[in-house]
Length: 357
Image (cartoon, rainbow, N blue to C red; front, side, top):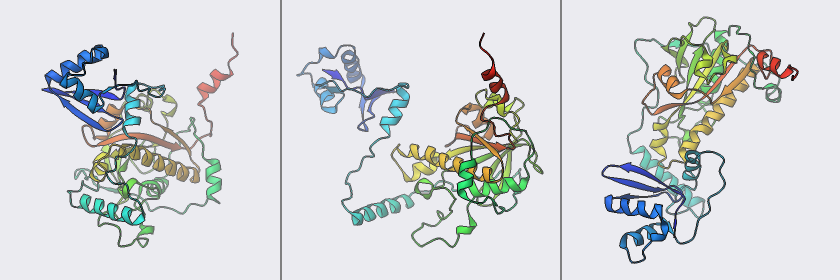
């Protein structure tokens, strides 16, 4: 007899939850069952066919007759649980044709719309008035192909100030609700969900938001700002931290003079509202990736170098953005500025050029 390798246990007084993250099933165990499971984990060979608890464990798949081999995994168990646990969305009745899918999806949407919706837009701090941004300017780069060829990750920036007009273009084309698409709508879109960005979003929910880190922007005081896409405006959240930016971003001090950055966050409550299955957590990262790439392409078209990272101190960033303890969480950071377009900072280049002793 063997213990199923796809289990994790959650202590939940007065018992514990055993979760099979591969089949998305869970069982609540009282003290008697918990003690027996501990014995079987210590020695599966003590399995007793006529023991009702052991029989229940076998029937539930907590125990298996044959050993189940799990795939090789180079990271820790937590990442493995996340990956396997968000596979294979359970479906009670798989649609057999487009008509069945249409009916099921419509029923699902109607069910969701009949539940209280999360706040669609971030609340505005009344003590910090909105700062209107300049309208998006026309980009003069010859072609999308040119922009794609020019985009590269840079780690050497001059710190030169960025015009506020460029910031308006950057944020509008990457995170803004495009007024240009107001006429590109039909009556199939639910009320309140008609806002459209230049990048796709899971379920059209626009679950990702943006916080501007302004270090050297013409006409804008340095600090952290929340971007409000419906108004194409900013509201001040916090001053810049006293410590260098590199301390916040996992010691990557080559970007301490970065004039502009963007923290991309995810409103998980929006995803929870429409999608019950944890697979939707993947969609938050996918959407952040879309927005990051769009931001970089617009920045490149404006003649700016770009840099991006997922390495930062989550708790410090949450506190800085004033979203600690909420359903909104930081996922990614992307920045831009005038650059010599070097992939490595000067200090790293110097190290690479050193002759070994």
